[in-house]
Amino acid sequence: MPSRLKRIGCSLLLCLVSSVALAEVVVVVSAQNPLAKLTRSELADLYLGRTSRFPNGQPATPVDHRENSPAYLAFYREYLGQTPAQVKMHWSRLIFTGRGQPPHSLPDSKALADFVGENASAIGYLDDAHLDERLRVVAID
Image (cartoon, rainbow, N blue to C red; front, side, top):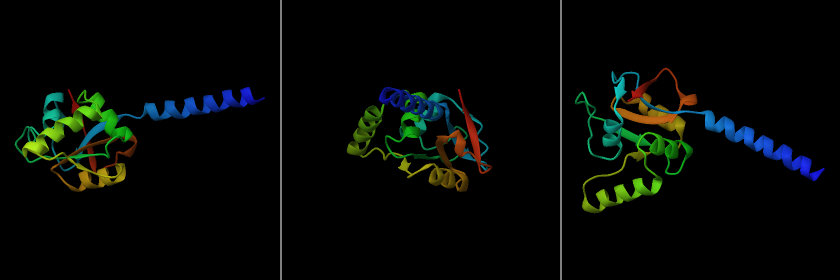
């Protein structure tokens, strides 16, 4: 009987992991922001401190999730091709030389959605399950 319970527990865990893995992290701006698409290079420039403006010249304020949160890990891996260690090393160098500060980190998806929804200059990323009418998904080429 214990092995049967073990199999059931493993099956439940696999179902939970599968449902979490199905969520997609998307890049978002305020619905007030006309931005519809960015290249991966433009997105990386914003999130790695190489620019503080959208391609149309308007100011951009990137915001992050907590370091090592599932959305943070997925965003940097999928969109920028970087690990948390690489991102940390990048920002450590910029901070040390006085050339920049990393994006402000928000505690959760609700806080990020609220901030981006209320600020036309903000750009962020979150699990698509947290989308609402205040946000516009940005297509990434």
